[in-house]
Length: 214
Length: 231
Image (cartoon, rainbow over all chains, first blue to last red; front, side, top):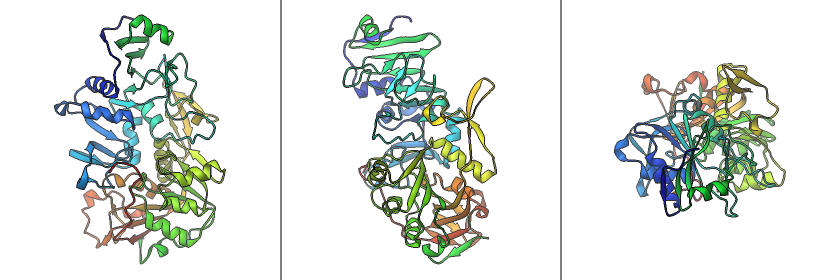
């Protein structure tokens, strides 16, 4: 639990979090960005970094969102939004697409989360509330398959309850699978040494530790 | 041998009550809407549907659900912005749901098509979706035993077939088509066009005709887009 090595006075917005994630993705990586907030990361990847985006519905080399007459409903991303091809893109069927995940071929995936535990358990598919319709999609496959699983989320719920927790109370997506957590108040590395605070934003480290019970 | 059918109705003829029907598509991309419409007209009911999603808007798979033909659906991601037909059926207890992680859905179909009896898979270990399932530790890693999903019928959509049933697809509309084609007793493909043998480069055929029983040309398929998604 070494001290934070980077701090800024202000809490980050979603774009700020996405920039941090993008900066931590090694050049040349094969990357899957989960639906929702993680798709923002694509906007901050350096064009010359050679990062190749995978989408679970059968494509490597996914480009930006399609506009106007580029829209082709046979060319969509995991969030079912029309996208574009980059040069060198490829298409493949679902079993191959998930072999890329489950076989450990993807370098990084970026997912949203309801909760992450201190030892890297992930809960991001189901609230378990009455009337909620469970829908897992590819989340469990990504969680156990990618070499590095980065989570991007707000650190607290709207009610102010921490989402980085000693033990998840929501139904789990995967066990001990998250390596880093990027949030509005800080960046955390999870692993053998417990929770390491890498960065703080808009909060002092001792206060952050207090809030999270670290 | 692959039969080239004159109509979508002919292509789905013989699907019976209680059948397990594999339906291709990811959302609306690759969804064989004309075959689903024909299945509606066919009248088969008490169906089990295996598909990634549980219908979008009010057409295609959603229309089959709305007509009360589906007893049970096996899918990875039923809840979507425009899955209101399914949502209503589910909340009122009129449809059974089995949620399957998307990779397990694909691999269980692949296993069925490849004659695999079951397989150990790391997805879902320690989660509610593995409860009650056999687990095993192999080389220090935990796995869950997963079983194949066999279809009585597969309804898929491809771009083009030759007269021998060899298929090529279009962009991300390929998705589940190739694995579903292998996993059913009767595989039916709707395509934009059927061409002569030799018209497809053998190097680019994605689904060889051995997996395809019936083909029908639907040159102007409905273009459904998820409501509220993107442009």
